[in-house]
Amino acid sequence: MLLTAETPSSDDPPRDGDHTARRLSTGSRGVLTGLVALVVVLAVTVGAATLWGRSALYATGLLVDGGQPTVDPSALDPEPTPVAVEPTLLPAPEEGTPVDAAALAEALRRVPRTDVGGQLDLQVDDVATGSTLHREGAQPGIPASTLKLLTGAAALHLLGPDHRFTTAVQRRGAEWVLVGGGDPLLTLVREQGYPERASLQRLAELTRDAVEEAGLDAITLTVDADLFEGPDWSPTWPENYRDQVTPVVALVHDQGQLRGTSPGPREPDPVTAAADRFAGLLEEAGVSVQRGGTAADGEGETVAEVSSPPVSVLVEQMLQHSDNDIAEILLRQAAVAAGEPATFEGGATAVAGALADLGVPTDGVVTRDGSGLSRENRLGAPTLSVLLRLALSDDHPGLRPLVTGLPLAGGTGSLTSRYADAGSEAGLGQVHGKTGTLRGTHSLAGYTRTADGRLLVFAFLVNDAANDYAARVWLDRASAAVAACGC
Image (cartoon, rainbow, N blue to C red):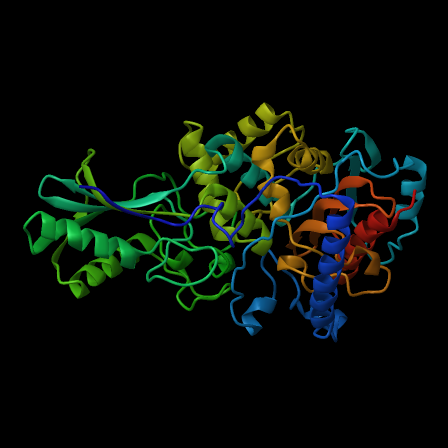
């Protein structure tokens, strides 16, 4: 008998329930707008209170995110508790006054570029018409963590938003085999909170029941984590990224974080660590366990399994928190779904194929990983802009998590502490965007509606920045200028 435990569907309230854009009546929209405004004001007020000394913090590297800073800001704070991504009320693309391209260009030109330096690549598109309103620069650059949008798109397109990953126990002859299924949010023990995650503790309980049903009290436990192939560490990542991302394997609990924080120390051998702890949980449940080595080849009878949250939720969490570990595992899972080797290279091929299927331009795209940590990744602003436009369209509802998962300026995720500088206020509560930051490299891609209610997408990349702080402030101000445009 197969014993299963599945994390609740994204359709189960109060968790993420509706990934589609919704339109309300005029009366309902007015009430909702007031509530949203109140929430945004509260979030921005709390966030702004912590923003003293920002220039000094940037100068020391304290506010460089998504890559390898001198000191990551999260090292000074408790690990943030993931929260449900609320259903997002998106304006209908055709609403609002069409934007005059020349007026938009002038609004962006007026944003000071003092000390930004470097190479800029910019694009702004109208979602309703698909037309490009502003294009500047033509050289693909390092995207940093905005690359996660491509990884998420490939996972959603190839696997589907409702797909889940299972961690299982199989009987293969005399062996009981712990099978890693590439669940990026698997935990050791059951935890409350969102998203509800599969746990080795629950799997051990189900396995104990299966052992008892088989009339046994002792088993030989082996492990199968062969879903992924090739190196578990990218040769394009420097060694000092070891506290930013865990080796990419198909069996890992708590993202391999030894202290529950990122950045922070990681398990050097996540598979062995997970198997050892699972054996310990079985012993605690009353099952005598003899540890074996690598499992025998072949399929067996699955006797217990636990399932991850759906891919839609994984993508939202990846984008909201710029989670490198989720991104790297989703890249491998996309490769598996595409029939490619589950390697960095196979993932890159899967991403390229998914983008081609979707009609997203791939000129200049180079994918070395799924997280954007590699400085060998390349893409241009049109790739991000067109992808976001498709995700907001009615033609691709399966891509909706790419926009529902985007942080809100001054309110959530990696944009919580942004938009506090003069000239960026218009973006607060209006701009939704994915950040990307490596030293000297800064990007922001997302959507907003203009002052006249028109829905636009944008992608801004700055490479070889002369000043990290100035580059990030420029991104905030430029996207705020798009939001403020009564063009």
